[in-house]
Image (tube, rainbow, N blue to C red):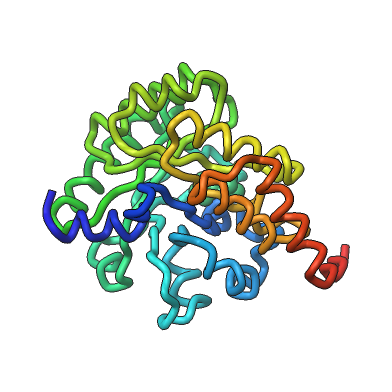
Length: 269
Ligand code: R5P
């Protein structure tokens, strides 16, 4: 692995711990307007000091994030579908030259194993890895879940192993029962997505369970930015990922921050 590739990976996974807290705000690429991301910079500006990297699309990066911002970027390179149609029909949407221009520390796309778009999304992953290898940019494979897919160890383990076999430098998947087997069968770092918003304590429990099973971090979005205390939540998740704190202690961090901040304005219906 060359110096540039290693350097970029060390910007994502903190060298002190080998773990990352990636803040995901790329949801609009297929969901369109997403609750909590109406004004992306307003949402993330107080969260960025606590995140290790930021995952987003080039449109939001260019339009909303000041270029002076000091955060490693994980750039979404796939899309072309919407929640209204077949999600697995994603293609590559960004040239690697533009990712370099945007100073991305890593590039990412979704694969849909077991869905109509399986072959095309896996070949796109291979193409993106070739481009990443050429330019020293690591690739994060996102094991996306189609409308009819089960988030179980058999399916997710299959998708993770295939990603690693194709050469992905890191893989994002979902936490599930038997997660430690997925970690054992995937010879590159795994991070977990948060999924839909759930009660704060449950989300912290999931992050903790994943770390205990060997995950190298989280790539979390809605469970942070849709929380009633996004700063409290990101601090709590960070304490689990980077400081090995337990769920009880992390939940107290969230509660303390929530108590010390003014209540969020109710959103108009
Ligand atoms: C989904 O494909 C997106 O890449 C999100 O970044 C990912 O699901 C993580 O966000 P969340 O924690 O909200 O699921």
